[in-house]
Length: 490
Ligand SMILES: Nc1nc2c(c(=O)[nH]1)N[C@H]1C(S)=C(S)[C@@H](COP(=O)(O)O)O[C@H]1N2
Ligand SMILES: [Mo]
Image (cartoon, rainbow, N blue to C red; front, side, top):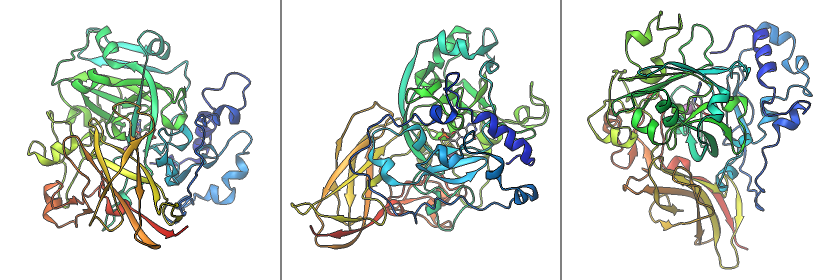
């Protein structure tokens, strides 16, 4: 997925690293580092780095790179590294940029700073000229149009939605046996406020067919030549409900890695639906499907193909199964798809209920307070649905205590902070886990199944086991997400 020509990569980096929000004369660093607008909390628990190594994985360098280290070619005063731009992330791969929260402290805060929000790219972030960028709208519309960024920003109403965005692959590293792909542990989830224009208004302005059964397929502008376009089909009822063309993140310009100048924001749904660098939108009465969208000669764009990321990927495939493609589906809730017979391989749309402990962090030593308690803090979310309860266990799920919610409520698609005052029996070592239940009584299961278990064949959550699947998606099992802590009496 990387550009083979290092010179091209370098040019690209030079261009897109220009911090897009900086006004003329502002230095890059100043423009790019202004994201820390939340007062840091007094306590900054530190997780041991063993869980999420901060070292970038070693890639086989090209000969050119071996001879001349990249750092020497790229003076830091004009070009901060990905790590320098995102000090709170642990880099999984620098190109394309993939990085997750390095530390559980991210999950003690009600909102995630731009610089602390994970990044997931299939291709290198594209270089953008905002004056040139436009988004086409085609297909079942009254009038096809090329939308400028000015029009997107100024001609429609402005909405801000806080959205817990999680990569479908978050928790993949806890699958046993391991599956391929980025080995995300817990950190590919963030909770940012995204501002943009409701797509419903734009579609209505151009006479789009917006009834149920229609789909909006949205294509990114990041695919290198000859690669599948990152494209997703979003059901029209979701689009009309609350999907945005977003251009700001936490009140600031979006960073290049998070989709500048414009991305799709699909509240409550897995990250893969939130197409970045939106270039093209197409209205039709089916999902991206079949030859027309798959083969060379696809409409308007020559060699590009569109079906891959919709039908072959981002679905739950039990061992030994392969993709069957659908034109239409009627249930967009991933958990309901897992439970029903409608689709064989559920699509990653609405997120499953999940929670993460933020404090204490992995490997930490904590002291009890005078009342003999330890404060446990974390976050919980449930996509389109609401979290009902969060419980904490210190004995591997034998007994549970119910947590309370606290902190600001940032709307229906935002995670909630929870707190549990835990009274350990004695000093010693413990494994703490958290389990959330949503308002439909869907609950996080305990463990991940083995590949040959019935649970995985059915692609459903059975016997308190999350189904192992070949792409490692949507792991919500609470046991592997727990933290080891040592308690000392005060
Ligand atoms: N065009 C494009 N959009 C994309 C992707 C991509 O590779 N290309 N990755 C998707 C995936 S898999 C995720 S999880 C989210 C990540 O968004 P973030 O990098 O802002 O966290 O973007 C989605 N949108
Ligand atoms: Mo993702």
